[in-house]
Each structure stands twice: as C-alpha cells, then as structure tokens.
Amino acid sequence: MGNSVLRKKVENDLKAGDKIDVSSQRLAYQHLLTFKLSTMKHVTVINASYNDIEKLPPKLEKLVKLKRLTLTKNKLTSLPPELEALTSLHRLELGNNQLPAIPPSLFEKLVQLEEFR
View 1 (cartoon, helix red, strand yellow):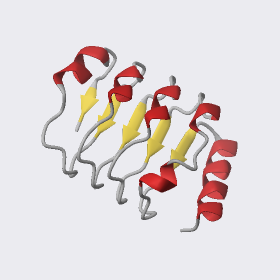
View 2: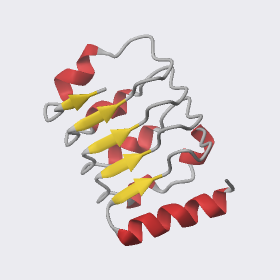
View 3: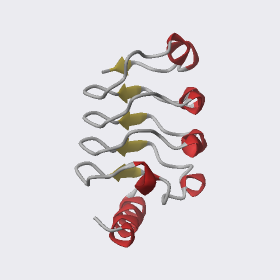
View 4: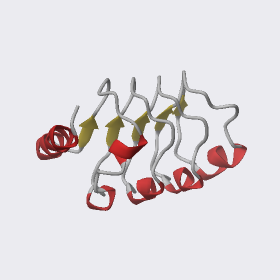
C-alpha cells in the first residue's frame, strides 16, 4: 500500500472515531514514521497486526489515551522504552513476533494493563 493511500485510510479511520486499523497492510517501520502521532492524542485503539513492523517509533509515547495496542504477527525484535509511557493501556498484544523477552519494567509502568498476549 502506498504512503498516500495509507495516510488516507488512517485519516478516514480517525474521522470515523478514535480507532485506527492498519492490519494486514504490509507495513514496515518507515510507514509508521509517516503517521503524525503527535496529532493522534485522542486515539484509543490501534490494530497494526499482520504486518512487517520490525520496530516501533519513539513518538508512540504521544498516544496518551491509547487503551488497546495490537501488534501480533509482526517482526518486532525489541520494544522501545517509550512504550512504558502508555500508562492508559488496558490491552497489549505482542504475540507471534521475534521478541526474545519482555522487559519486566514494562509491566511495572503499565499499571492499568489488564490483558497481555
């Protein structure tokens, strides 16, 4: 999916509400960098599963209202420390990636986390 088509899809998702679904779009890290995360502070749900994402952008921490983040079936090999700033997260899905371990500090910081997969 081209960057302009992807941006349009995200814009349409945001117009419809506070959820972004970019699952199964063959996204990689460079695609995530095109999102203006600092303008998406009201987003509560992101589904970016079934893509080719190897790492997450540091500006992810700007999504202070994010309650659900689905990143299953990607190519993540590590998690950025900024993920710990998402203290509103209730559900985090990271299954079927290439993560060797989840930092224990992540669970200490994400005090509202109810479900982890």
